[in-house]
Structures are given as structure tokens and as C-alpha cells.
Image (cartoon, rainbow, N blue to C red; front, side, top):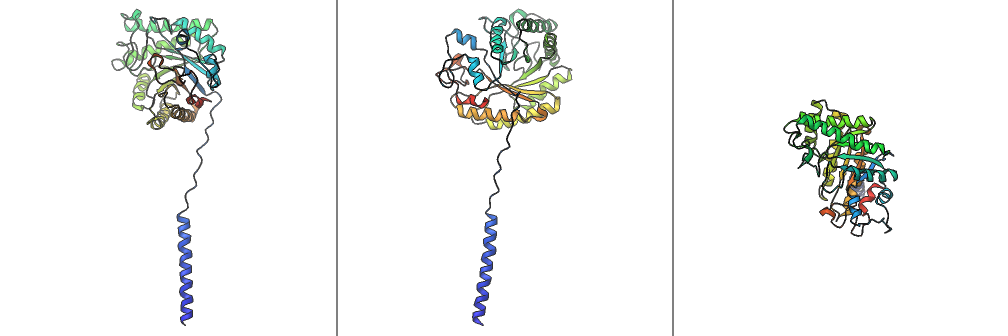
Length: 350
């Protein structure tokens, strides 16, 4: 009787251990970690750089080398890094001549010879135009808004006609640079008169299409993560029936916030596509040159995000002046090291 009872107790104990062990085993199983989805980058995806400083740098005897330390032309180096597009800014009457019509033509001819695609960025200013300043060119200073519209049209036609007569038809043309609050201030300031800004964009658009209807016209805004800013500008243009083809963005995050900014930028790009039906492109990126590995991660992630924008409307990513090194012009966001070679950051474009 006691033996049977002991057997019974042992059996129950064994069964209980089996059940508990089974539960523990099942409960301790970790979910399988799935590999991140593989993003296929389209063959025609835009990967490039704005290198508008290049002729001025070369005039200052600055030289460039590939990753192996071999001195080469900057266009060749960037092409070896996987880039296929060059962006060039245009100023109206720059005091030193750099980025005027003749300088832009010289660089565009080199880009074409290298087999690169070309984007032209009209600032409609004699020097830098950006969110904090959109100065009207000195020659246009006393013009009313209707005359400014003609100025925009004539300047755009003049530059693009010169390029065209030399066999160059850019794929994209920006009418204004980082026009967060319009351009050609004060008359073209969007917060004062969205209609005036829209009219200036319309003039630039008409001029571009006059040269070649296949060229895509871009309106460019900084802070690609800022959806409310983009809605304000592009709702304003829509309300004024303003035509354009592409929405351009800038993005300059830090090593600490790039992941958040990239996610917000993807959300903003998808909103632009659904709200306005336009293509989108990140035409300026940069990050402090002292952390090239983080910069590479930032750009690689951004490229993968632009490539999956809804309806295949994410066009590409361009680095702003990557060839600036050794604190050229005080700029510290380049992607070449102190010896003039590309850093690992540019491997993101390969």
C-alpha cells in the first residue's frame, strides 16, 4: 500500500516536472528575428552631389584623390563612388564670377563628358539664397513684382539657352533654392504674399518648359522632416494653381537624430505624394565630416527610404559639396578626408 502510494507520488511528480518543463521551454522560446526587407534600388535612381565649388577649388590648386590615393578628376572619383548625377547652382551676377552662367556651363560640360545626369539650381540671387535670406539681385532691386516675374523668366531662359546651345539639356531645374518662405524678398516672401511667390515659380516653370518640355521643374524646401512647412508651401502653390513637377528637400541631421529625421522625412515624402501627386527627391544632405561611419549609415538608410516611397515617386539622394575638405570656406560637412580622398561616407552611394 505504502509502496503503491510512493509510486503514485513519484509518477505525479514526474508528470508535474514534465508539464512545468514543457511550459518553461515554450515560454523561453524567443521569437525568430526576421531579416530586414531587402530594398532594391532602381537602376535609374538618382545618386549624386552638388559640387558647385569645384572650379573655385581647382583654381586654388586643391587636388582630389580616389580611395587608393591616386589623383583623379573629381567627376571620375564621384562616378567611381557610384554617383550618376551632378547638381550645379546658378547666381545672377556674383561679384567674384563663380557660379555665373559661364562657370556653370564649364562645369556642366564636364559633367556631360563624364556621362553624368545634370540638375540646375537657380538661386535667383547674386549670392546664397536659403531659408534665412532670399536677397533680390542688385540689378533687379527696384523692380515691381511683375517686372521680377519677367526677370526670372529671362534669366532662366538665358542660362538654359546657353546650356542647350552647347548640347546640354538638364533633367531637372530648380526654380529657387530652399524657398521655405518664398524668394526674391521682400516682394516674393511667401508669408507676405503667397500669390507673388507662386507667380515667380510660374515664371520659372514657363521659362524651363520653353527651353524643353521634358525638363522637370522642382520647387525646393529645406528640413525634409517638417511636414507642416511643406504643407504650408505646397498648399499655397496649389491654391494659386502653380505648376511644377518635383518636390525637392534638404536634410542635415546630426549623429544623434538622423534616424528620427529619416523616418519623419519618409512620412513627409509619402504625404507629398498622396497630397499633391508629385515626385520627390532629397537634393541636399550632409553630416559633420568627423564621423564618416555614422554619415554612411545615415545616407544608406535614407537611400533605402527614398527608394520605397509610394508609387515609385522617390527619385534619389544628392550630397551637398562632398569634395569640400580641410575646412574649405568654413564648411565642415564634406565627405573627403584631410588628404583629399573620399571617406567611407560616400560608400553609401555604391
